[in-house]
Amino acid sequence: MTVVAYISPSLNANGRDRPLAYAMQLDDKDVQSSYYMPFGAPGTEPAAWGGSDGFVANSIVTANLTWSNVSPGAHTLKVFMIEPAVIVQKVVIDTGGLKASYLGPPESLHV
Image (tube, rainbow, N blue to C red; front, top):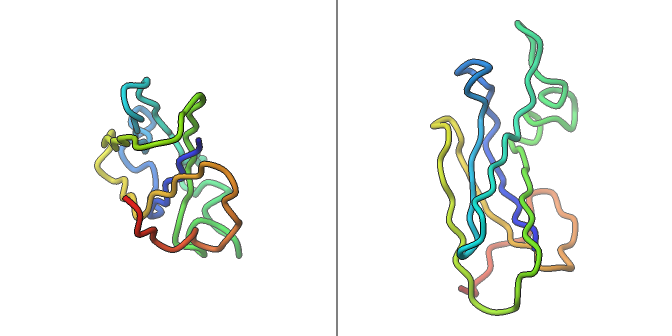
């Protein structure tokens, strides 16, 4: 099972020792962290930041976390803040068959 977080673009502004990150936990499995924003050289942005298909042009950054051996049924997904500049806009749970789209699938009515 893959969980895709759609995150607002932001830079690692708190220094190299505090990169942008968040964490998630599925049920009682190990907590996984994602340090998703690459560093740029001092005075520059990361390569993925600009361009016609970059983080800014799309107004979104996606980051994936994956769990294996997940059985069908109800689960609990927890999201943890590591750095305060991380703004999670949307969470998509891919249990297989997720079709490619610009900003992910529409909201599900299933809970």
